[in-house]
Length: 283
Image (cartoon, one colour):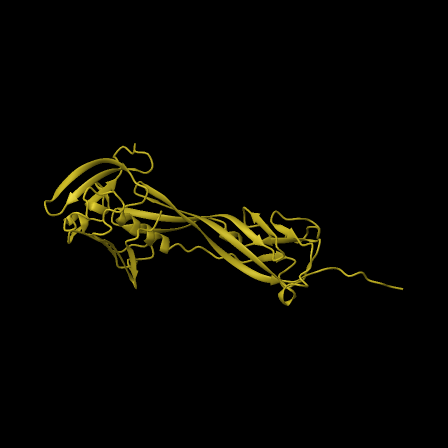
């Protein structure tokens, strides 16, 4: 989903305003607001005062059309969008993804006009506000690097290193924003960890890695690790910078609507020394 260009964030309040100059930009409504800027359907405002309604992201969301307060969401009509139109799903649930029933409301005449079925690439503005509310509450954890040998001990060239992060990170994390009769849930699912070893290498793992079991051979390899072939002697301060970057797949759904957000990442880093065994000369 692309964030609408008429979305503004100010302090604790989120306000979405569809101004005359941009009212026809998404092409959903039937009114050309550049020609008829005073048409009531060109004045769409969505205000989110915050999530003070509770940890589930509840609380009020106010929508105005032509200066009049109207429902942001109606079970019968769907979500308020531009041009004074609502977008919802059919009763039987036969419409494929991206297709919605369109109904346009004129507050000046109190008339509701059926607009057929349409395909939307972006959610209606009221729904977009709820999606942003749910996304803002996602608590995506930062990875915590662990390794064997430990991070406080020298790594040795040609000896496999085991890497892993906390197992509890590797699950889907979610947050829900609610209005009476409707909830939107945002989800973050880990897809991969990219380990940058500091020596120019990168290793991609599709899981959290396996903690060192304690009784494995020192030369055994893990499902997520690396074998250094050069020391960190020439690196800044004699240490490599190890970095773990987790990539998250972000989605949202609710009320028959769903969407995908750009992927995001969280990361952790540490410095490690990589050395080599020196021969012991006796006699």
